[in-house]
Length: 254
Image 1 (cartoon, rainbow, N blue to C red):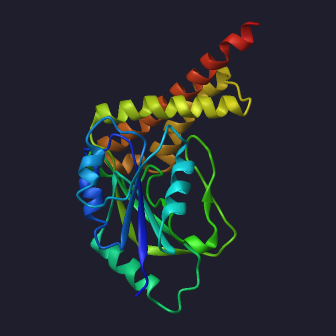
Image 2 (tube, rainbow, N blue to C red):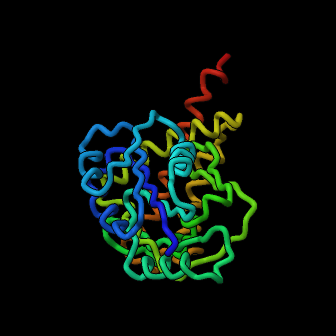
Image 3 (cartoon, rainbow, N blue to C red):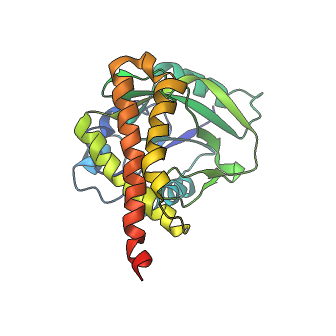
């Protein structure tokens, strides 16, 4: 029987970590890479694994690479703490890694995302395939982007049929806190690439984001929450470029 390592990246995830790790109990190894959480994330995680590594404030990709290096088995599955493996996905993964006809080095898995407990079927949120299952021997590494890190490898890629359950935002306050964090990281990342924010970026990019999500991506079919999500996504874009303008402002005044 093929064995598999699961990697979970955490930071103050006490509200999520138990359900996440519960859905991974079938894996042969669970590794938690924690960024020095200030809550009891690690204490809760120790009910499932003693393989917990505390890191500094590193980019997400670097923390994933630490997990890959520490993984004992060739097959690796990684999750965020707000995600769960469904029973159907568990069965599909175990069948796949034990099938002698499996030839791909990595697999994309679709995410079924919930926004304040509502499954978002449209708005550009579904389908949402991401690389989550792969062989360590394929040499996969993640880049050091501050936001939305990418996997770098040259192997073959397949797709699974079952979904990861993604409970992205528990409530409005959680969304706002995450928005503040991610827009700051995005602004810093853009600044590092010598990007600057223009009037167009701050005014028209948010408007187009709303139009694309609500109309082109059929967010209107997600009902009231589709309207809320499209509006908040536009605010996200405006906040990101406003922060980019502000972090570059001293340079512009010289």
